[in-house]
Length: 225
Image (tube, rainbow, N blue to C red; front, side, top):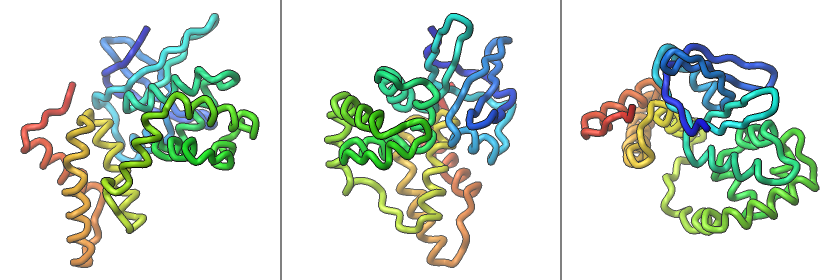
């Protein structure tokens, strides 16, 4: 059973609505299906021939072995819980996580928003009802936390800046910075974007990424390899 993999990214590609990477790990090439958000990030930043780490769900079938990769353990665990629901296959599970973040899904489950869940291709009303019912019992703790933490989250009103901060989080995750490291740098990034906005200076993703990495590395935070 493969739990996670760390290796050199050889290439990434898209086949219909599926997204893949090929990772060289000690001379073996592992073909792994990934989420669209991570695929787009790799393409945007032209990340190749660099070491990446993915949490893996290994599904063994009679005629094939399928590997699904995630940038966080939470994504992997959520995917596994989705697969444990009767009638839900791996592609529907990937489709759900492609369309929504875990936070959005938890909120949809909490509010029993069938319309949101059923907007995923392949999911009808009956399956949406079943997903909400079963996931609500599995994620009681997360649903409670989601309802309590609102005031503690960073408030970014500008949608462009908010999207940039979200992209930055995903990139730092792909570079193997820890959750605590990323959480600690976000207020600095938001403050910097506010300063640049007031000075009527455009905040580029590349500059914010460099700022974040410089702060994290200078604080003695090492990338986990």
